Length: 428
Image (cartoon, rainbow, N blue to C red; front, side, top):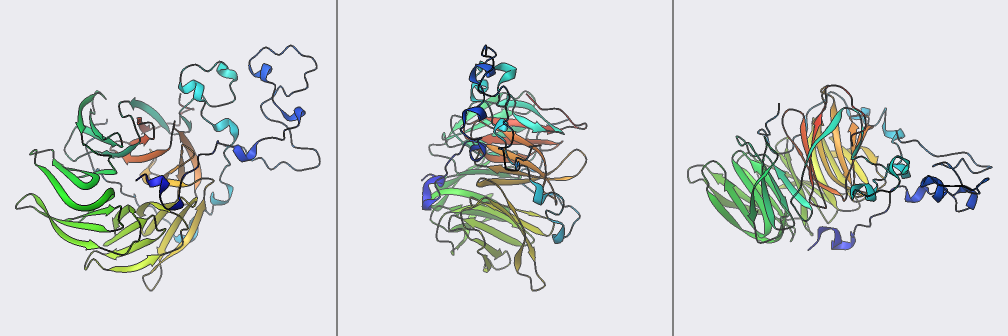
């Protein structure tokens, strides 16, 4: 089953700026020959400019878009920041920049054959913004990257894809040193300590990279879409809506079945552990909160109107994102229940969230959308710091040590990025 196609949530890719195109009157069109650098008409009835002026009689509403080894903690953690719930979006939330047509990635440039060169109206770069740069690109996967992991104590990076493989990369050279053929599409991959855990249809594969123990955890029905570890428990969200639980037995170096959490009616596609709670997001549009003490559901959050794609905890807040084009910030009330304290709206469905600190220790939210972009927002204001562009949607984000972070997109490309000490210009 393709996650995007289920339950009426089929993703429709729209061109960037599709809703902001100028009027079709000839005097508002950009001259094709001018863009190619060879217009010889004078006067020319078309524009020799990328942007038409505001239509007469109306006001313009256009907003201008403004030492590393890789070993270290492997699963996403939201770094803390100082702030209260009423600060969310105060400085930046109401002035998020619109995506202009010129912020679209040039497909011809990606293929290496754009005829317009510097005169092309689309971007010839992988990112916009200050403070981060592209280090390298890892090519090899043939389909969407669904997991990126850095097992503790390893000098290897692991990536997994719907092309039914996992790849092993040497962190020093960036070279692929091995390919694991898994026999099924990978729905997710995480690492915890020395363990590498891969979610497959009806199965979880577990490898201990230190002692080469190889385990198969059976029980899931359908694709395993999400996994997380809390204390000594492994949780897996499955296609049939259940959350299966295993307890790690250190004496036998095995995972023993512990429980099955029922409550969601459709596939569980996001899991996160924080504050002694398990949070689960599903294609049924709900978030469920489970106590880690007794594995009972203690609250169901119903404010999203489409698939809950990603969850992270940050400070005392829960952040969730959905294909309903929103990121929601949740905070606990005096009674202990979670309530929405701020909603950030995007133009497109939101696929993944990840928290990181920049080179100046400021909290940054990485927010991937299904228009093939990843936004970098400074929290808690949601002021945009930059944008990363990809050939297809970015489904996987992973934080590494030393200011490194990774993105994996729908074409199978994995890119390695680094926060810079000094701001940088647009990266080509």
